[in-house]
Image 1 (tube, rainbow, N blue to C red):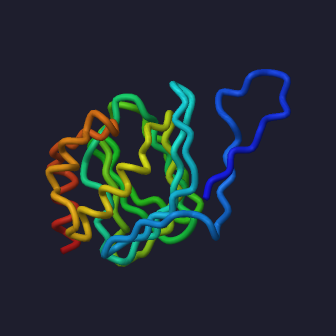
Image 2 (image 1 turned 90 degrees about the vertical axis):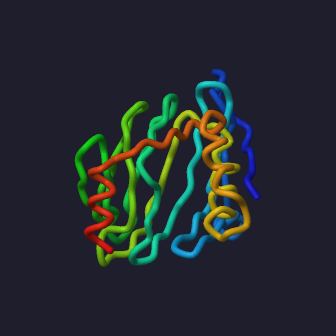
Amino acid sequence: MTEKIPSASTTAAPFQAVLTRCADAETCADPSSVMTLLGESHDAGSGFTSYRSTFAKGAVGAPAHFHTKATELFFVISGSLQVLVGEEITVLNEGDFLAVPPHTPHAFAAAPGAEADVLFVFTPGMDRFDYLRLLGRVLRGEADPKEIAESGERFDNHYVDSPVWRAALEGVA
């Protein structure tokens, strides 16, 4: 359960403080990762979405995509995450931080031979927890993958082809 904490500030805050206790956080699992939904506030233009993903070795993460409105932030808590940004692939290791601005194609997966534990933050938020729930259902075979494609505008997730990323993933297989 996520709690809203009233602000004691004398100036108007863009959104209420959000507190999610670890024991109360919702999780979405698929065959290769677990997403822990930490908090989101989708107030117009100022909100955020934050979740933590733990990736097993060989987990594919997200295919190449971009966002038109959101900046996506990555912080690697432990392990290693392979990331595509534009046309470059890099590996983020424990303690590394990456901010991907809107309109920048990117993708991610557990680095070859590694697990990863990553904190993700999107700003502004856009009810992205609903997208993560849908993604989990698709990956578990409980929903049609067409639902992901049909939700692109709603969740600001626009998939693109990346020969660089495809080649990187083929090199792992």
